[in-house]
Amino acid sequence: MLMALLLDIANIVGGLLLAIPLLGRFPVVARVTARIAPWRWLVGIVALVAGGYFLIVHLVSGPHLFHFEVVGIAVGVLLAWERLTGRRPLVPATPVTTPAAPSPSSSPEPATVAVAPADLAGPALLVAVFGIIAIIVGLQGLFTPN
Image (cartoon, rainbow, N blue to C red; front, side, top):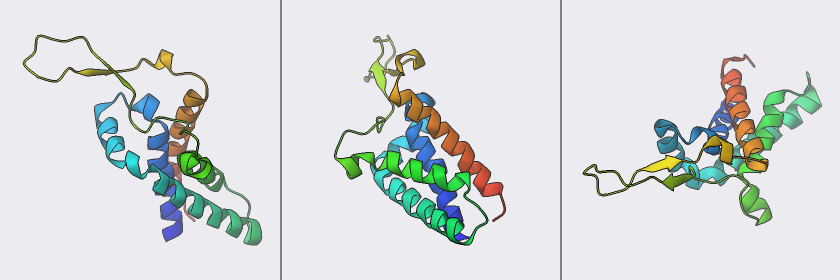
């Protein structure tokens, strides 16, 4: 029960971290992901362990392999990619922003505007879309009986 909850939460949080290029334009999501982004490798390890545990359990004792485990393992690999391979991460750890034009407002800091989705392409877009799928799979896992 606890491992299933860990897998579902790791899928949801990991999906949020993977979907930063798409969802980072929303202020609420950007604030949440900015706080947990330094711990992305830990979320990846939890997803790998929980997904691997259920992969072994369901391959050995049945009934069959579920998509929750496969998505959890993929989320874990993608989030821990930098630690596992030593290469740069596949997605940025914080929302990608560009400085906006100075405004006549009284705020001393210039506002930032998220990069347009049209600028997102290739593997980063693929990983971001997979992050949204991982969020959906995690939410589905919360409401699916074991």
